[in-house]
Image (cartoon, rainbow, N blue to C red; front, side, top):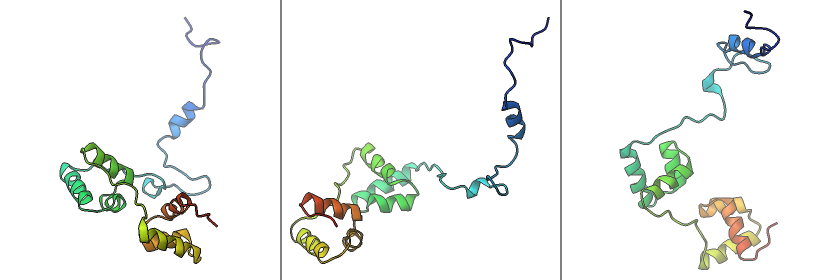
Length: 140
């Protein structure tokens, strides 16, 4: 009895692919690329219970999520999720009030960019932009 024939699936490129699977990765035009040189791959990092406890303590003592992310080699949102899972509240996004808000507006009207003002006040330029828009200041 013949098992292969007209009713069998035709051969595909998979056979060729499976034979070459053991070859090193190659770029379109160049030599083999080592896995450690690839861009965009992030090593997953799981915090130990001691590191997690330290992270929460440091956050409660005033460290920013961004600083803690850099220190522990994790993403900023991972820091906030750890804080929230532990039952603690995250701090609200920084806002400007009173004299500091008036100084921010004056600095912007004097010609400073939102990024420059962000560096001056220790926030992102987008925080400055959002604050200015919320207070009716048109961006240039």
